[in-house]
View (tube, rainbow, N blue to C red):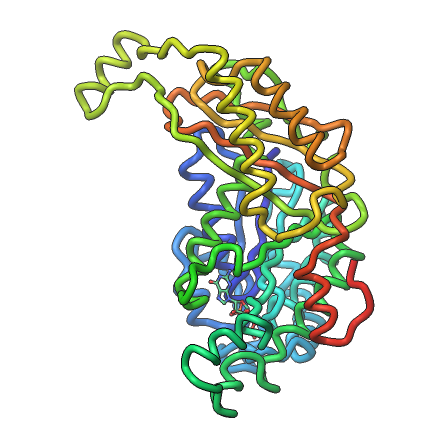
Length: 393
Ligand SMILES: Nc1nc2c(ncn2[C@@H]2O[C@H](COP(=O)(O)OP(=O)(O)OP(=O)(O)O)[C@@H](O)[C@H]2O)c(=O)[nH]1
């Protein structure tokens, strides 16, 4: 599936940047163009992979280029007033060449929560193809949940001025996120959620977590989009744009799980080894089918039971798709079918679309699972309780 990407706000543009990097690393490129929109000039400046011309500063008159400090209402006003600028930013995407657009945003941010819905709206009018949102929730400790309590006990109770660093009145991360989840599940074609606490090591700061979280989500989304783009060597099955489109978009939110197992690809190390592989066509390892099946099944089990992008009740998903990525010899039809059956048993979703991406240079067997229509997640329930909202999905 060929995608366009729009990053919105600090966290959103960082995730968009990570998608550009994942595309550059992929042997089946999937990203056509990426643009960044922010009210924070320094955050735009800090991006790596998005071209300077594709970075758009909004609201400079209101914020002096310093962001909205969590004010989603102000960000939404800026998006309304500067709709022509937003439109111009989005217009640079070659809409005729993309199958879908992914809008990336950290939903606790003022700009992420306030501008992303406007971007979805503009895209809906200009593209005619699905618009998905990849949304990062604020961390539990950032919004003063259980994690914050744990932090407080390790360092003694938090002082009032420290509270302002988490979810004080000037940074209403939880209410921004709750509002954005409600709005975006209704207006976008899907909302894929990611929870920073899945990636946060015990005692680590969120700042240290974000780069890993952004890279991991970008790699997962990239694996799904690339599965339909792989052509050489021929896949067993293609997960094409229409199959992914038909998986995204069930009522609820989407989550992405992934796991990988290191495997031999028979490639030789170093420059000389690479040349020998080229001359000799590479040395495909002789893979035992039983081992290939067991690696496929065990990796698929890990993908749905560990490290989903949002912890949730798997059985609440109503649709699923799987992308397999591995050296060709490891992609046995029987292994892929058995892995698919395992995911069907774990989720209760009977019809699961799948595709594989044979990659002679892959050094692991990787399974990426998209679950759509998820409507039962303790993390969302906690967010609802924090802000006193009704069910968000
Ligand atoms: N995943 C990720 N999250 C981030 C990053 N930077 C900040 N965040 C988190 O994203 C949320 C919103 O922060 P920003 O994205 O900087 O906010 P914004 O959308 O630019 O909005 P402003 O309030 O106007 O600055 C907070 O929960 C941050 O903790 C990042 O690089 N990656």
